[in-house]
Image (cartoon, helix red, strand yellow):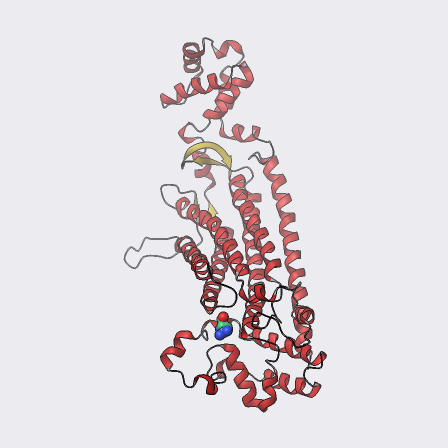
Length: 477
Ligand code: ARG
């Protein structure tokens, strides 16, 4: 082993396996080589290594493969050992003015920023799928629920746009966290920075970071950036699981509001008739996995004294698990939403069920007869207790008893009653900002489409900045 030498002597396989991060380090192998290159280029520019040493070391790094790495408690040690095996003692210059502490933190940030951009693209894709389906169903009147009880009619567009807006906020949270992730801890060394005349801003620039994590003690010891990405993912999964739950519920024969495409379902090994919404169920289940990743990471880093502690190594695999689980869930949901068949007839037939037009009946009474809303609420409540669609005679009778007047004598007749009880009319009059009326959901669809396009451009821009920096770095030798 490269590091123990005469200081510590041999290590047992058991202890080595216990302290090793080699398995999770596969995620940061490529990033580590980039960090090596940036650091070496900077060392050369500052006159801390010779130009020929840079070329020789970089050429050797080019040939290093993850699968062929030898021993070492982590990928950093294994790469350095392999480098020295290839170029001899000058390979040992690479770790000048550097520690694995700033190295690993830099690697995690490089991989995480890429994962975040990928996740952002997937979230944007799911929001887009919802918005497109909403655009197809501006006129589709459906039951709206509170307490999972029929509440008021709405439209499918309105319902799908509600999920889309939640996801657009998730996008914003991920984008915000990206800017705090995309900062360089490199050059902090173990924690106290270094007496070598290094240029931290230069390595940050070479690696495509937006700036520095300045305080060298903070730089190596914080994992708040990873907690933030996991938190945003956990919140996103709360939203994804709500959508998944409705896909499950709505595809039961009791609801029958939609049918998932075969691709997103499974059947039973014993019940040949079954078509189960397994993908949506797994999104719901994986939400627990992502929460677990966040809670594990929080618990691991809490109350750690300054600065680097090996506990931090234990947080990282939770990050990769949390983010990749979230990405998979969002991607699958986008496919399920795009291909789902909504049962328009059934949705429309159910839209007035459970006297869901009662609110509009009370509202219409107020608008037409000028009685206080509470009186109207009491009148319609009394009608609802009878559990049948009211006739104008029922209404007159109840209103007279409760409020001392007959609506039909104050301009609220059969025609007004019918309009109030029509789910389509209910939706049509709800045209205020954010309401379900087709003109309003149409406006929201157009507006959100623009947001989707802007988000796409933003991702391209952020990705382009990083890609250009890294492409240039790969050419340096
Ligand atoms: N593998 C470690 C990690 O993931 C980085 C190495 C720092 N090790 C150390 N003994 N200072 O955090």
